[in-house]
Image 1 (cartoon, rainbow, N blue to C red):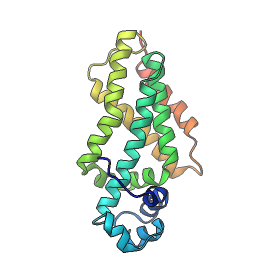
Image 2 (cartoon, one colour; image 1 turned 180 degrees about the vertical axis):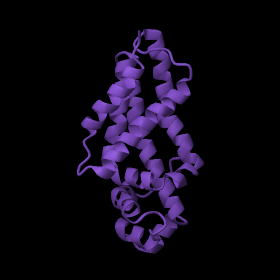
Image 3 (cartoon, rainbow, N blue to C red; image 1 turned 90 degrees about the horizontal axis):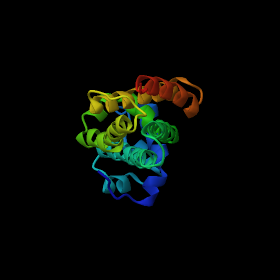
Length: 194
């Protein structure tokens, strides 16, 4: 999924995401993306065939950041429950660092859902590590056993994502810690052992 992009594009990622978030996918033009990136339109077309590819790159980059943060949290020290809490905080931190990409995602969830690389990216970045933690938590006694760890991982991702996206869209400023407290309470009470 990762694609090599020039440094100027990576530096303009926030501005490009903001264009999509502000104007919506259908209304966004490559000219606006080029202006946000600070390059001529022809340079942008050298790297991308159109805005579909720009969007895929943007979401892929966000998933790559999410995957790195989640892996680090999931592979750390502590019980599976403690690491799951850190995974949720890591997801929220990445979403807070990339608000434009996340706002754009909620605005055009259907389009993102039709991108197979994005679905695979979510599975690798979030679902697989969380499924592993659910299984470890059952073994170490810090989490209850669940019948369907994959669907539970999906439900956790959904609960945290929707809570964060709601805050990103509706609140004056995103408070990752406030969202984390609510999401962690909901998820970990539901998975409490014993």
